[in-house]
Image: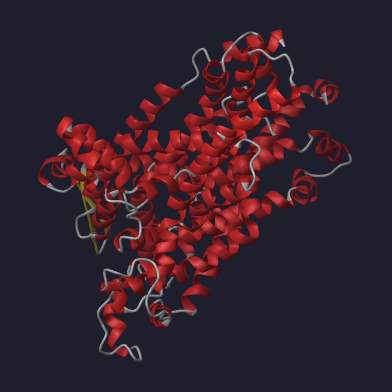
Length: 332
Length: 300
């Protein structure tokens, strides 16, 4: 509203022969703009909405951080809402022990890392096939890539379990409880969100001018040489992006993973999902917690925070790659 | 390039076929073995009593028994399914529309633009099923108690159904927002591809901002809305706010006799998802979408 007053004042001072209508129009323009999206009023509205939405986005995380530093008394105390009366970091210590850190962390890193590498390689090969070659039934297979994304996981998971248990019992090879089943699926392009990874590569490879590999072909390079020396070398950024996504998605995947591992390898998110049970088993043995073996929110939130930290660090360093990666999935 | 393909016409298509399938083969094998075959096998399983014996998997055909058990005898599955359907019908449009609005807001010259975008994308990275479970379990997502707000009880007196929809929408409003991460990025990307001159042209022709929004922005964005909707439907299913997945998983673990029933669960669930996706497709498919855009283009 200040704006309108100063505007009127200015208009009078200059003594332009402006009609009342013109002045009103000018004020209107300043506040509302020509478009819904320009002008001061909409700027204020925009910022208000964005800031309050951001608050709602971050609310659970802030609440998590606050709760994780509370002592049992603070949690019971109804007067303590956000800031605990006495900060206690013992929750983290307890959660750290219950989660089985740092072993669980290393397990999660290598497990997701290995699966991510395989997924990246296969997605690149598949994306390259779709981006470069006109083969028979290409459209059909491409729509199958998209279909494989839409199909609910349980439908395909049940026969997958049967396949691997059958192979295990007929060959005597231990498969359930190891990384092998998921490794095989990743190797054959059926890992977590493989379709999206293929799409990222597909769209990126389409941007590389085909003249480059045509030229190499004429010079006698084989298809794999072209792929390796030209396409891969030019696509390092998108390879990094796909790897990061595959890593994070494998890390966060618990449905398939817990079905195949059955707790044999302790991974961070899975340990978190059964935190209550492990806590019950371990509490009497945790130093200093012998008489406080009642689980409370503070422990759970401390554990959640711990399990999130590796991803948060990844995100802080690679947020541009992540967002650009999704932009690259593009729309045909 | 044209010269080349003209010269080696047939040879090139044959080479393309071989090379294409060569690069595709790992995925193709995996798809056939781990996705295509299971798709039909689960259907077959759902009509069987599946047992794990010392000799391997043993199947006895039992007709529709599993489906009847799932829908009628098990007292938890049908309510869970209905709950999920109602939630999806509220959440999916809610997520897509909110993502679209946020994308429009973020698609202008703003200070801290990338800061906001970073926040909105954060859940895509940190959210796993177990994190969501813990956050919801400890009440960390309860930003407000909808049923304690005065207006809510007024709406409830007016129409319990509307009140239920509002309750679902705001009960876990944060969780709803947390699913907008990827749709927002897709929408921003789409909005940036719209030719600015289209708006100018329509303005000269006397269209109001509101009109150009509906006639230019919305049609161009519709295919992206469809993809975002599909993505959201798929994602929604995979998190603990969907009780059905957990039920299926429990049925899978119960290998003594559960796999047939689990398959029936899985197929009923997939059928519902297919219907929801079909619905989304009917609403968001391209109809006369191209017409207005090309019209403006030729004029400009």
